[in-house]
Length: 472
Image (cartoon, rainbow, N blue to C red; front, side):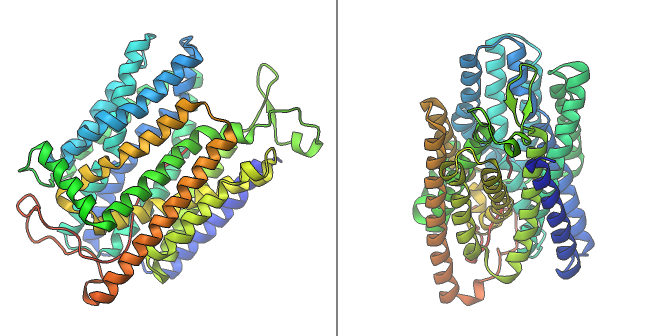
């Protein structure tokens, strides 16, 4: 039995134990209104993520089957990140002015059209698909959360329950990722590499229909033009340190996460001949006789690690503030990516480090989402979230274009994550000061008493916590 499968089994056992612990020892919300609201959000969100996951495993394989050169494939991938960085930032900000529900529908339309382009063996049509996919990605990671936070506050639910929704979303997302990978492989084996994209399009259509019939619309500041929206967003970033710190943490962590997604395979695949018999047991061979690794086992282990992290988040958030415990979590994530630098070629140590990193990802997403729900102004929530996707995507594009050695790439990630831990400490200091100066406002955001498009100045009260997002 290879080390990757052993890691998957051990983590699955730990994840099951943590799930049982959280279900039996932590209080369960039984309020009918909240349970129905959470279900309405999670069904749509998980369908949206399924549409994304179904496409991921076979993008490179599809391009390769179309006889695209390695350089052309690299250009297509860079175009996707570039589109998300430039065009996606503008499209994502539409949510505040034209509605978060409408923006989520637009996500399904854009990503569905991107799936259609995969049927054409033409570089420029595929490039168009990458542009559409990049725009859709910006919406996926801003509009859905913005809709959720507004509706949660509008309905007067306790702010602590927001973290529970984000944690359940990450848990469900990990399960969806594993199932989507299996479904995508099933259809690809029988109908070709383009088939998973058709399945994704069908899932996105179902998602759109459910949104239309079950989600109410909500807005940020729909009275301002786009110039004013961006101006207000930048003003909030300049004048509120907590918003600035959150944005920097988001950019640094997620940028490192996306780079990790592209680099974990070469980091775990030995380049030189393997003389150690015990190490050879962890390797497979492809049709050309090249040594490779069991990607399915590794991916499944990563997803279980994320699930485990989401359960750890629930436990930690009951004993201390998110602002506090995210400091060691981010620092641990930085240390975990030192393993391929300090122990090159040692699969067991590197794989263990990567599992720790994925666990930190599982803690990070619900933490960041909860904190954004507290600190980011409602009127420009989606716009601010997309503004910080610019440096995020820029980090990934620059690293991809530099053709850096793998050790240098991971060293950059360690530096970015260390910076994220530093900004988290600054955020904690701001949170601690506000808690001391105004203890009565320590709890969560003020429930909305009127539509926010009528009160664009409403923001979350000072307090402390965080939020939500994916990997691999």
